[in-house]
Amino acid sequence: MARKRPCSVCRRWFEPNPRAVKHQKTCGADCSRELHRRRCAQWHRKNPNYDREERLRRKMVQQREAASETDPLRAMDWEAVQDAVGLETRIAIEEATRLSVAAARDAVPTKTRVEGLIPGRLPITTARDAVPAISKEQPRKSNRLPRQTPRDLVGRSGPGT
Image (cartoon, rainbow, N blue to C red):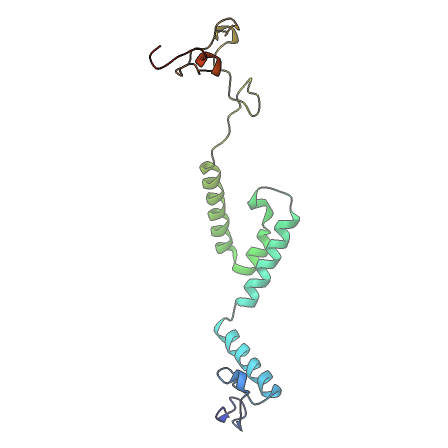
């Protein structure tokens, strides 16, 4: 049987549920709600700008998704950024983004167009007439010995004959 303990909110003594002895901190539902409210308020005191940043982030993502541009500088609502952080910071962010985009574009190799290339095949390096043709009369040379068939073995009397 679990030992009684004081409630974290109202300080009354209660007997915790045997399955939740290690985790139960409050005596009932009302105190659980109050403990949750207190912990949320404490978290918001530690992270005061989280809601503001999250709203701004969501707004920028929505605007970026609405813009069909591939240029990230045009997809950003710079007036909203300026309202949120100020003019100097906006200019610094805009320039940093411009430099990042330029560096990323320079890092990606561009594909060169090859004339006469058939998709899925290697480029033709020699003229077709320069490749020697293999005639059907000339057998291909092989490193293998010819295979002996049972007809070749008929009539042999023993080894060495």
